[in-house]
Length: 221
View 1 (cartoon, rainbow, N blue to C red):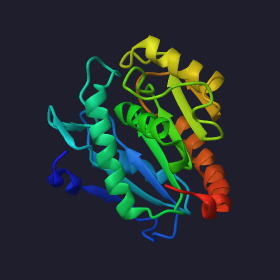
View 2: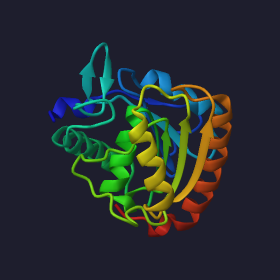
View 3: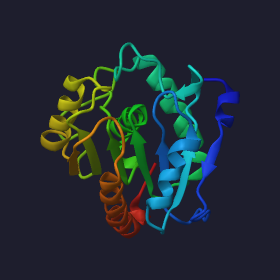
């Protein structure tokens, strides 16, 4: 990953720019950019700094977090490169002790999943919105890998973008094998975040921020 990629645009929401606040990083879907997902912050609770980061790989007029070998199936080397790039950026904005939550949609959900599988202690929580974990991409998915991690999982029965086998495997792993503390939310509709889901996500963020605030002095990265 080039040094220039580290200058990828960041869109910060106006609710707060105090680096003493917990950081919520919004990760957009494949082919989109930061200007779309940052609008989600309008509906999320105060008490955090919200930022949306543009993915580093230009693709089809938008941006992506990793090269694919099929929808929802990252190329392992590409995912490793962009995760390392993300961590270099994160280390600049979130010193040890600052709680970090990830909220990813679609391709951004897979990227968020990769980050927490790679280094669970670095994050205070992760929201996986209408996406899959990055299975078979060089990351461990052993039992208990995400022990104690707050996770918000939202899937739709009519999602025809992410392959059904990956959605089902993600649901099964997170709820029964990962060890995470999962709030699972299944909705009608397709590959999109509904107002109902946003309401559930906002409540989850509030609760997770409360927990993270109490544990922030123990957080390490």
